[in-house]
Length: 357
Image (cartoon, rainbow, N blue to C red; front, side, top):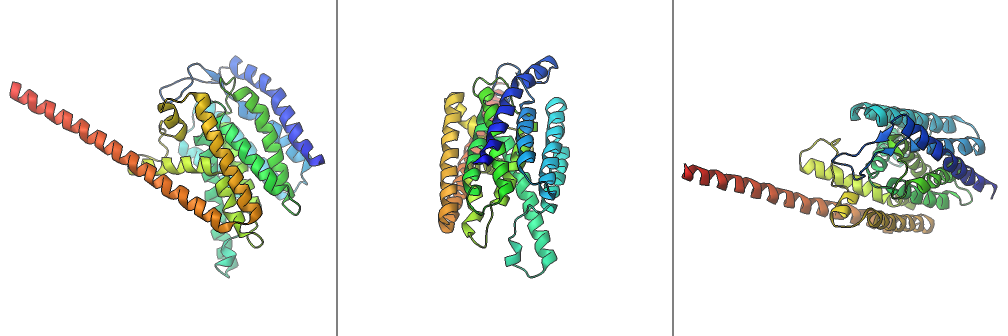
């Protein structure tokens, strides 16, 4: 029960720091200005991620036994927060941010936070370590960017991350589970909740890239820590289901950009939340719909893990993959038809002009 103080302390620190962060950001012009791709209509202070980070790191360090893993998580999170702050202010190129994400992911993987799958495939210890390391780094980078990509509406990324954190609290709070993971989940959930009270529509502050990237790192770390393959094979699919909303949205974005032959780092307005807004839903309604999906995913993920329903979890993931492919295929066909129609109209106009001449 005493560990729950990590949640309370994180919440209070984040909540109390947020007004100071808002004042500092406004005073120094560190705001997110509206543009064609963004939905908000007036400048909103950034740096909310700073209060989330401080709210997280203090109880995390206090309640954890300091070792290489804890240090690596703290250092990697701090690096992402600092780089994210500069990105929010100066707009750093995606390739440079990716290099930083690779370095931070590698740091926590070297510290021992990695999947242990390949030992069941090969007897070569070094090859198994290399494969597991690569899988872990790719997974961490993927979740970092997945959380970053859903940060498009007031309260969206924070709320989805909070829901996922609660799911990991339930999984890791059981007897015999990883203690560090439990403290990470408690501290993260508390810090995000303090932020959300200022981030619900209409938002008084945004977390910015400094918040979304470090939160993504921690959720990825939690999903790896939650693995217990020898005792519970379902633990390998449960975290994927818990994080299904950001993973699904990112998967759609990747497939969409490949189909349209666009750069993977190109920003667009076709994410799940953009599509809901385009359908006529308000910001509040769109966020509520995605929250509902996130809660459903979290519940299914927790049940799959606790009840050890590996095959059910695998079926759920397979269904989502097929659904994503079908959605993108339909979108691709609509885009193709629109392009053909446009070219047809241009050609027809050209022919008419030729005859007029």
